[in-house]
Image (cartoon, rainbow, N blue to C red; front, side, top):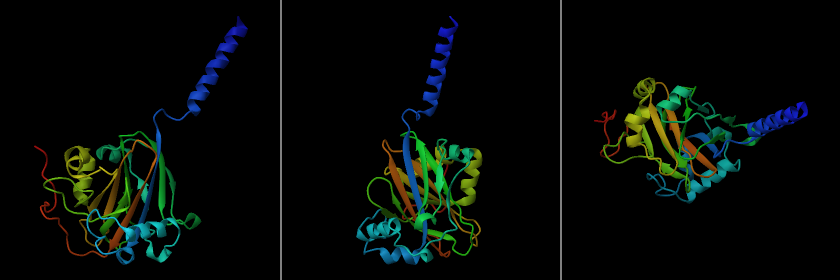
Length: 255
């Protein structure tokens, strides 16, 4: 009798250990690579028309290859703007799931990308933040994003009155207020941010022009393992920008 109990107990312990060691059912590994560059560096790679919103092409392919292969000078990289996870309350406000990331900063093995790897559930979202520490290059002027398909160029614009955009700008203090209320995604970004290709950018324009913008990268988890890429293009603060038909600053709340 005791021998049978011991066998049953050993079997239960073994099953528990096996379940603990097994990956979560349905979990998929995702990777996000992020780099910040000067505007002059970014433009030097591009061909005619590749600054157009949503454009792809050989110049952007060459930029990606230089970043991947270590062919980019470290002087072209803004290493103070590291990608990082957000707090759980922030993730919820942007409609993001809880994830446990592994972070590999740029500078290791000549890599210029910051890299974050995590396991997630297809169909969910995760949220990542780039918050500069230096003040002399303040404006996030352009982005190049890769989710599905090739690396594409996007100009961040104000909140659209119709349709959606892959890269949006909103006042940083407005975004902070929505984070506090937990409503950033449900009331606003779900109406304006296009995640069709799996990756979108929300630029929080700093209310103090002397301080840099902050960038939220929102990933829509694909059905299969995917590497997402974001090239953030910075310059000194210049004039405001607004898309045709875009609201001036803050989107109106939903009715």
